[in-house]
Amino acid sequence: MSTTAWLEQLHDNGYRITSARRVVVDTVHASTRALTPIEVYDKARKKYHALGLVTVYRTLEKLEELHLIQRVHQAAGCQAFVSACHGHQHLLLCQNCGQIVFFEGDDVEPLIKSVAKKTGYEIKEHWLQLFGLCADCRSN
Amino acid sequence: MSTTAWLEQLHDNGYRITSARRVVVDTVHASTRALTPIEVYDKARKKYHALGLVTVYRTLEKLEELHLIQRVHQAAGCQAFVSACHGHQHLLLCQNCGQIVFFEGDDVEPLIKSVAKKTGYEIKEHWLQLFGLCADCRSN
DNA sequence: CAATTATTGAAAATGATTTTCAATAACAAA
DNA sequence: TTTGTTATTGAAAATCATTTTCAATAATTG
Image (cartoon, rainbow over all chains, first blue to last red; front, side, top):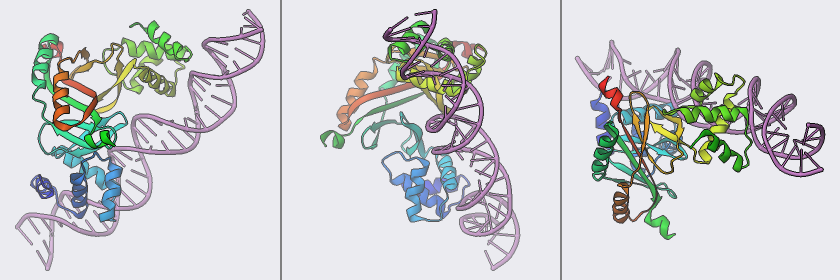
């Protein structure tokens, strides 16, 4: 999904396309790592100096609402976001470089069914994250 | 694992047993829901009025360090903790009443191996949380 | 091109967490 | 026991992230 498509999504949902939003979208879209609001702010401001941090917060909020980005939870904190435009997918994070890879979690279904049966819960959502070292970081 | 065992753990690791710590330990240990620092503070203060919020933060920090409690991540926020003294287990949360159930995740291993193979990552940790409705909340 | 109205950035307000610090309480050793 | 050392305490202040307020500006619609 291209940045243009993200902007279209924003527009289709009644939001205006502004320079500030363009540059935030570009920044988050381009990153394979999760970025915190301040990191987005710092990177994006190199391209658009007038950008305000508040606008970054507000834009991230909208992108999350449209499921174009998703929050990444880590031991260090839970404020970072990554691009998430491939529907429901699970995350695999490199603990060294922060690189993020998505993977399908079809195999989780049987586990969910079994847990539902054992516990009597009706399971509505699940949430899986793996942590490790990417091929690059392993060899260096 | 009893509260006494938690206190022993603290003591064995060179921490002193104080009234403040006792009451924080009691409070978290007794709860089947995840509690935020303020919630712990409010509950615990009913038993020990002089307790300070700062001490709650510091005690939770130590309990987490000793793996006696673990942080619970939710859409609403990631500041809450639950008792976690059964080793590595996964969480199942009731979205209505907050009740938490632990379950083993043996079935996750094959998935992890398969993802490792596909991605070239060496996977060190994993993290699984399920959300749904408990039997009680379903029927009411 | 004009009018409407969402969006902007700055500053202030809020909320959570951490740090500082002097008083106190726990505990090991005598 | 009692004592001395030192970790722990709570309050206040400091910090950090996030949200709200507001008047100025810029994006869209007609």
